[in-house]
Amino acid sequence: MVDHLIKQNPASSNILAIIYLLLFLTYLLPVLVVSYGTIQNDYARIIAVILLAIALLASINMDFVTTSELLTHLFRVNIFTGVALIIDGAVLFRRWGFKFKPNLKVKIVGVQIITWILLIAFAFWLPFFNAFSYFANTFEQLFVGWDFSVILPSDYALLASTGAALFEEIERYIILVLLLYAFRNFKIYLGLSIFLSAMQFGLLHFFNLVNTNTSLYDVAVQSSWTFAYGCFLAVLYLYTAQIWLPILSHFSFDFLSYSIRGGGYGFISLYGDPKILCGLMVAAVALIATGLMMWGKRKQVMRENAARLVSR
Image (cartoon, rainbow, N blue to C red; front, side, top):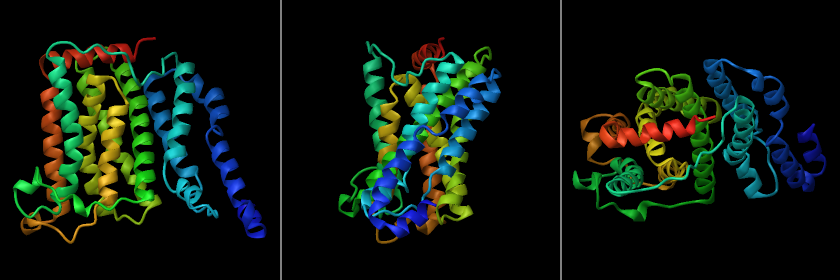
């Protein structure tokens, strides 16, 4: 029906697009309040949120074409999907007795300042390491000395990266809080919650098989290293309790991936499939950083923030 209206009156496409996007933000609220909001089982709630995320990804009309390039792009990225998830997540948390507070007040003292600096520096170094590892001509260029001239950003890269970072990190926040609460009586609740939140983060990328022309092989490789990156983003969030940090790191990761236009693969391709080898390198350094955060005072800080996140 909408497509018919657009064909009859192309000038109306922008107005219809705006109405569509605004309705998209709230169209699931009745279902959430009446059905999802009554779920009492901790594990069923986790499954419900995953189904909610899939429903949002699947229901937006990516073929909607308007006379506005910006509006057309908005149907192909996850910005409105992310905003809808914020609204839906806040409603669900209220119904389930949780506080929707992805950013907590924190007090940084003593050696925590150094940890914060190193953690944030790594969070924004890793996207560059990932992006330039494919094109490095020397071992040194894997880590530093990158050629920034190959970064050619576009409006779509900006919007797509913003949407992916917003949607996926908000979804991860909701899932992580629910996992922490569900496993609160387990001795290894922190590590288990980090592991499972990262696993579903990686598996979520299989949805690219539906929305893009990506092959199963590429998605499988992507899901493998995004699991490791997901582990790091989880500890980044749990240590800082600031959702904007994982969002910005994730944004940088995707923005560079969308924007770099290289002239073939670097020396890594001499040793095998660069997609697998570079993915393994990214996974390795991400997991090393994650492991270092799971010891001593750093782990205690994450435990304290986890307790604040699930407080009711």
